[in-house]
Length: 252
Length: 252
DNA sequence: CGCGACTTTGACAGATGTCAAGGCTTGTGG
DNA sequence: CCACAAGCCTTGACATCTGTCAAAGTCGCG
Image 1 (cartoon, protein in one colour):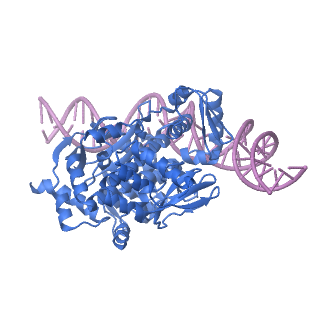
Image 2: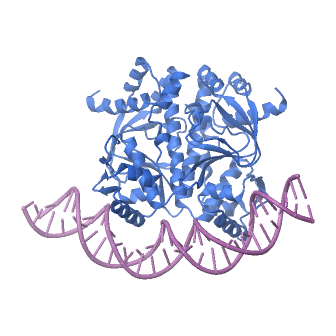
Image 3: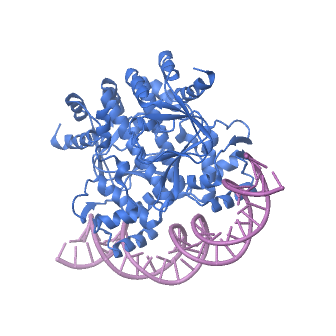
């Protein structure tokens, strides 16, 4: 397996290790997982509603959106995944897709057979636990999206989403100012926060004029992290990225 | 253990069996789970944000809401649970609560220690799988709520929610007309669908005048199931209640 | 250089929120 | 059995946010 093939599994493993404890042998099982590369062009719906899948997709590069639609065809993106994320890990337990998947930009994924995931989860309970935990964290993110869409203003919705992505890209550091990639269009962004692309555009302008952040040419430029956090009412706790879950599982 | 104590576990087991396969012995493990009863009065927030819990709550009677809040204190209910549901099964894998729990009416629960759940999940991989699958189905419901709140009109939101609850109460049968309990207030309903209680009231009036359903004195009276389904753009697939998941897992 | 996709803007429309008042239920205590 | 209080429901008038439609501007790729 080439360098390019193994890197995404290492990213995935790193994410698992930030929340779960795995032995050397178990770590090797993750890194040894098979993956068949696939590439999708922008806007390609590569898993359709109700389709039965026999693999999960690990994002190597690009951005994937999970979405549902209303009867008029309006889309609501319910989850977004970037490099190192296993997009539909849940499909191992529920292979009939309850929501569709769309490439938000040119995207490369590795298709990991369910059968391989099930095998290592059964052989190593700690791996089963780690994967189960990933699904639970995804659900916590989903839960926060409901709050975002249901009870926040346009500015707060967008700011909150950007804060989440910055954290998930691990872009937040000491500095109040930094960049991270945002590969999707304003239309996609609108579908993520339950607004219209026109209104998203106006709201981005407000965030720019407030000196919070600028979105330009597919890169998000955070001008003031503290301002963005305040506007978005953002509390990173739900992302479980602080290692607290790990410390607790060690204690148990 | 008395009759009253075991019934809720039987309800829970029935739900598990509709989606997963368990041997006699494994079924006995579920039924033998310990549970310490607790009762909460209406509006009691019995799990707070960030609190660390060491048990999951199985609803015996009443209704529980999981919720998040914006900075102004506005609540968004992200999930609702009724008798037979394990409210925060996910907390086994993520004990630090990322969202709070509230009793929406007088509610009785059984507190099931995480330790007991972990033990049977480790001892019986099929149980681990069944519990993992329950978490995944909860996430699918959550996902549908994002779509509901983000991309549907007030009428459709309420109709959709009512369709979901009717299905989960297993109240849908041959007849186009039937009842099911709705124990929460219009205020709670507003918090479920991301609207105002005033607007919920107006919208319920519209649904009543259209001959779709009537909500009165804590019971939802469906007048025309087909109308309600059409208004709510409801497709029950995501609930995984048709046994398809079970058939597929048997095939595998 | 030119085309197609994406972004930006303005004017106007429509849905939902806010505020405020009154009516109805329900449960409790006399 | 009645009266009262508290919480819940209902309604109207008005405010605000977000959506719709349409046109022009910009960027990126062939």
